Length: 603
Image (cartoon, rainbow, N blue to C red; front, side):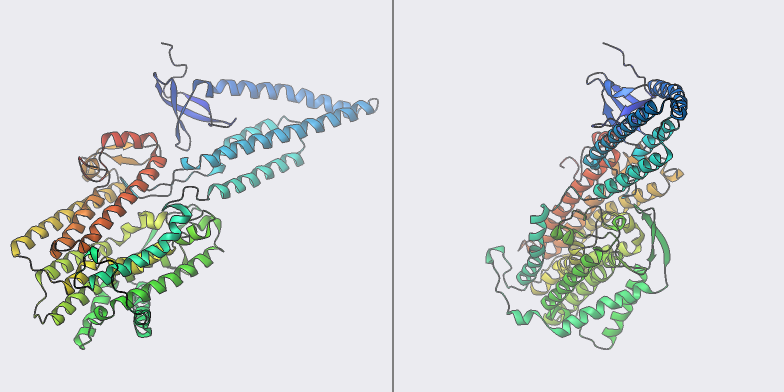
């Protein structure tokens, strides 16, 4: 067996796959079976190269020394001959020959550069801009094309010190490089991998999502909400819209806007964007929740009938859907004027429908007011709690009860805990893919304003028309189940966030991790060594506990569990893809150490 030519840790020159350009790399390992070297580039990229694609640094230095030793003599000869009055003809011939050489050299340089840029754009999926769900949700480790070409620009400048090119020609070449880099960066920022079924899938989802919400609400109103009774009787179209309801929704939305603009709560910085900026966010979601609770309490004190929400629930859903559609159109129109660096990595495909659905602009703002960040937690999530309370009061009124049912109390309590936890840990949302990667378009606007408040409250809405009695022992068992899910969810997220903020914290000394080329670590002990996405496991257990108080008469209350499993499996697949892009071979080693994704010993 032949010994490897290059040793581990040796610094050599590695050819970028598919191009003629060489970069400085460090050999990390050698595979005796495949005879491939694993090398690490300066930007952290790890690739496997053949021995023929690796050269020692001395070979490059030798070439440059030859060029520098021969260039001065040719330059002096050229100068003497061009000044000699006895050789005008030869001087002119020499000059024309030089011009042809310069032209050929420029043409060759442009061809090599274009070839490298082509391969870089093809290998755009190697850019490290994923969401590391297993240790952090950080989308900030993007590699710019200028960094990849910078070593070649430096080599060109050294060689040009001894070349025959005039300074004007050097300036033109530098301008050419700069223009090509800008063009390639713009092309590289385009979204190439389309999700949700691409253009056709997103077009269908724009109609399917509202239809699904209305179908679920109509079924809950039926005496027998069995799936066999499809389709449910459709109400008259004029009954779905009421101007007063739309006015109440607008009042609710702008009341939350007012609460978010109050100068209370700390101001924190988000993650670094692709343009190097860090946006500031005011963390006052929990204060907004307290102010909302005070406002609702005041209304109830003055005998306001909160079950008005239940009586006009379908109209409120239509009003929210109409508002989210108008907001999505506004967001897309304003995104057309946004700078390239402010567009979303996942919503910049160039296809109108796809970008409209996924969101074209990453962080649309009106002044310092961040539209996406506001909608993520405020009107929909807090509205979810208000709707649950309205359903509780409606149940008491319709069934002439002095106290709400035990099932309704459990559903309200479990989901209230979930919302309060999200608002109390509001800062953690700044590292999620919704903020760092996804644009703000129809998907998030409809999800935040319609899907969350009207679908997540499905269990409470169901219990109003279909009361379910449960015993105290059953209620205790369901409470324990919800507590287990919440403990896994919160402790896993806290473990991840603490490790991300300060990996050297002595309190985290018991955690083991796999180092990566990006400087981050992948946890292989604790919750993140149990499964790759323990927070998703906690989410699913809690979703099941929210549905169990509704009994087993119909499957409709369990739609949320089925939907949540499908949603988290989709997110998990997307997280896997981005983490593999970002961490490379380290992620493969992590997957070998932690084979199960969400469900231990199952999936």
